[in-house]
Length: 367
Image 1 (cartoon, rainbow, N blue to C red):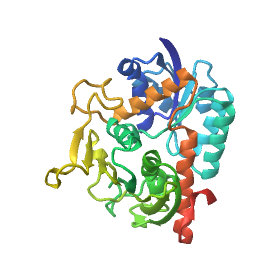
Image 2: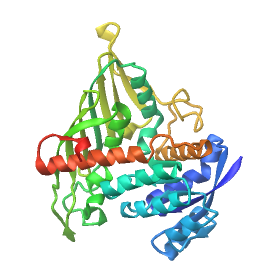
Image 3: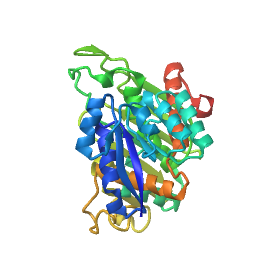
């Protein structure tokens, strides 16, 4: 076993999740690289000091520049706002340090392209944090599709629906201002990533984006609430993607339905340890969707628990992500999803925004 010094920029919601994951990934997966929480940076020295004590870091950096430059920090995790991602990643790559960056890759498509180019030029391990697609059930769904278990795919529908801003009287907050904080910057990247992971590249889109609640107590809303996206994959398959922060009653509605010539798959993150599989075989009277409970036979489940149906949770998907990042560093080769995959999501989002503004179909390659 070899220690590796980890620096995390951002100590809030995702910073904590990554700190917890790096603290226990070695025990869960028996990784050859064992993380050491070296340094944390935040919006202020006082915040960094607080996170240092809470999560068990050795140091609290004055700022992200100090953290990245620290020789004891051998790999960097970016869990700060999107408008900071590019500068941090480029500084880390210049020092040949591996980077795990939270989604979306950047605030703009231009920055996403620059980050992907910097990663490729540096030849350093890089990864983007799309954790939901890493559940054992969704990894199993990818395997079923790749192995042709449901035949030729004929339709895809992907969703990410939440309701944290469903009430019109919900007070104005930071999520209501700036394009990067709206639905298209916050939620839409997840179902788009799922579509790319399960179905392959998207060729073109036609979309509508809407702000339903223009004003809220305390301010004017300047970003979108939900988006409806028709898409055509390069494989020729037709699909639809919907994302919303005003989907009343939905708490973690990351879901997808996939139809094929031999069967179908259904998944909903609110029941993340179950995959529904339909096989179009046998007597019609006994056909139906079968609920498959995640268990040790499914990818990345057994290290957490030997009992089928006992389940994994949100934090476990971040631990799986940590394992993948450490494996990539150990092997010296980026694994899916890397910055190029993050750029692919950014390009689809740019095409969606263009379509919503101008109307009509927009090829992804034209944005």
